[in-house]
Length: 143
Image (cartoon, rainbow, N blue to C red; front, side, top):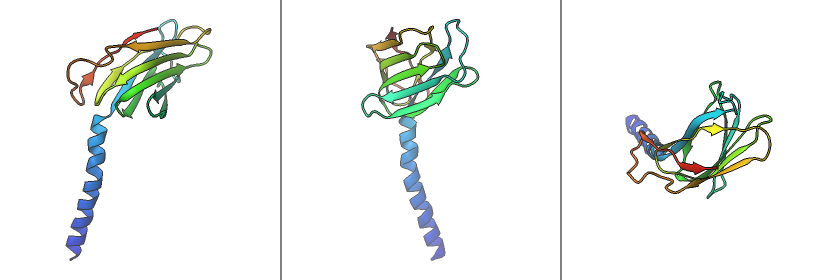
């Protein structure tokens, strides 16, 4: 009887864990490097990703090599905003993230002044199907 209870507990744990694992495989992410006006990397820049449909925000800091990764994002349309010190903020809007996509986007900051706002233009996503864990595309973005 004790073995049956233990087996039931393991089955319940697996049943609760598997859907979480399956959903995580469909999540996408934004990756890139934050650069200053001279092209040097910017460690410690704030990168904020906002889901335009739900309003949910995620914030990360660029690492010592200026790289940022914002992962575990649901397919949706996003805004990315980056700020650092006295440099002008940079914002991209209308960025379509599809399931299992790695969306590369380097963020080049400019000297202080008016913030730059950039908008993604169609096509936001590749016309070919996206393959999980290997999907990568870049956007057609203008500032």
